Image (tube, rainbow, N blue to C red; front, side, top):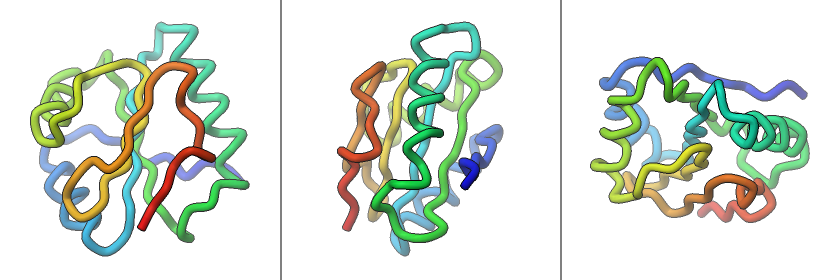
Length: 113
């Protein structure tokens, strides 16, 4: 099963993410397209996606940090999580309930309500 990336390109999408997170968990992956560690973390996430213990149709947003850095700053402010790259965040009930960065990103560690 292919990873269902949803591009995160507009600041307004964060409002939609917060609203959706009250119904189901939402994942955000922040990726630097020029960083080999970020590329490795993205590849690992893609390999783990099919076996992840996540609800069906869990949205997975992809943020290109080089093109949309202000959105990353907005995410840090909105959810109180320091910016890192690469970084995976789980948003539930309007809050960040899990985050990991670099090679610590493992879908098997993601716990959702």
